[in-house]
Length: 209
Image 1 (tube, rainbow, N blue to C red):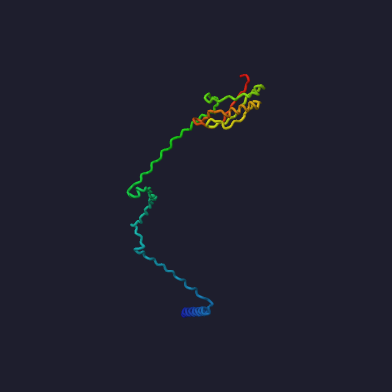
Image 2: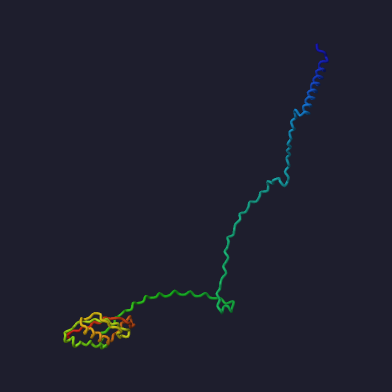
């Protein structure tokens, strides 16, 4: 049978057991066999009340930026230059009139080709004598045609006389050369101006005349 003192004994035994466990646990802590976990750091969060400076005003709307328009750049006007003459230099208020624009030159007509003429030796007023027929050539029956080239100056006088084509007889050729060297000619002309030129002079020696 259990007595009435058993419950008190159990409580004292339990307390004694807990005391022993506590002493053992304390000893283990002192010997650093076990360690207690570090307490967790508590985070604190506080909400700040908005001030008047940071509180948005729903009634105020920021203005929209205005578009910037650039004015067109204008080029500087070049300085005007005025020409001065000795008279205008003496008078500062004198203005120089602009020079008149020269008129275009008149078209030049193409020159008309001047008409050229050859020297002449057959004019009647020249009164040129015929070559003399050599007497020995007459007796011998020599006849033929001599052609001379004559260079005539602008004055109408022969400057050079050469045999262009002979007759086959030196006497007839020399007679023609001697006569023509004393002749006069109508000079060649270029338009209205007399010019020097050459001309062929034929002379025929014939016994039939």
